[in-house]
Length: 374
Ligand code: IPM
Ligand code: MG
Image (cartoon, rainbow, N blue to C red; front, side, top):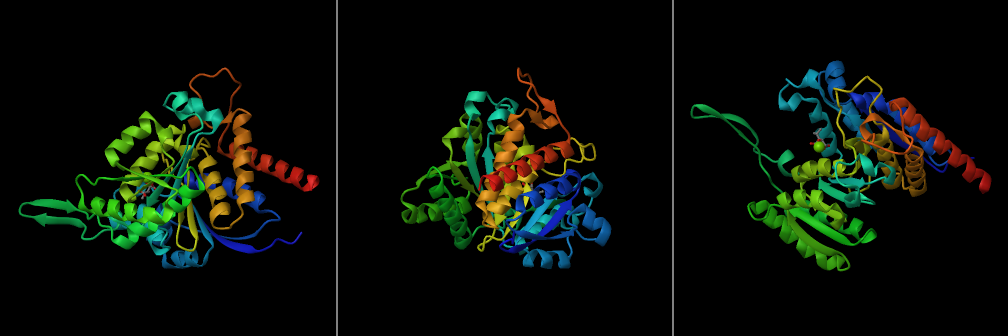
């Protein structure tokens, strides 16, 4: 069968469990793509492994390769080996440069409870059953990138400073993305800020509110970030889509991940205006568990699903991956991080490689069934 088109994907496995998970996740990606899209895969370094091999967290060539790729799939970056480096040379800088160069300003972080994992959450089951929320985090501005920034000598002590800045166009473009996504979901958008203290948040609130006239079917609410953190733990299902700035989104998305049972389950997509994207699990490189074959590969696999959905425009393939993950979990397979505390069901603990392989086999099986039932 002729595949309809080809897409170039840049794979940056990175450090720690990122490097460990990636080969298994790529196998799943190839199975998912079969007969649907020809994938042209390029592998390169980013993060600590790039510092070791090339002296910088990301090289210009890799950034150029990312710019000509349809999507970038990233594992995770960082580790204690590089912790002592100055901020500008740290592994994380490679990731930040990539986000910024690709102008991937819209970071989509869904937090969905897979029903078989309801007992793995630290919250009571009835609070998180069928949870499905989406955090839309602004990713290329705010305090992460604002200037001036630095550490300076002032009088007889040092002073550290960063700048939280957003201009109207940055706020408006992320708001449009969030409204559009809310329209396709439950039509509720909550904008999170700190407008009782920060001028930048007052502007944020004004711009997000002004845009509501273009999306009148979406119900807009505002919440201060401290309250949002509390509400996410108290009653997460009150939310549908949340939109917020870079740092608030960083914090709230880790919190939301834990509601679903494990950080190891949370994928993300970072999109630019043309839907080119950078896809990465929300979890980090987890150096403490790296190399032991215990890391959960599902957040990376679900990030691949988001890649098929948003950058390759193949929602059916994305649905197939999501369904395969669901079936594997329903069959009782778990990595260590998503083990229930106590369970009456039969649960099988599996390693990184086996979990990815189970999803891969499940996908192959469903592809086979689909082609024979056609
Ligand atoms: C994330 C991470 C990154 C961030 C780090 C690794 C730079 O925490 O993607 O949430 O702060 O954005
Ligand atoms: Mg984070």
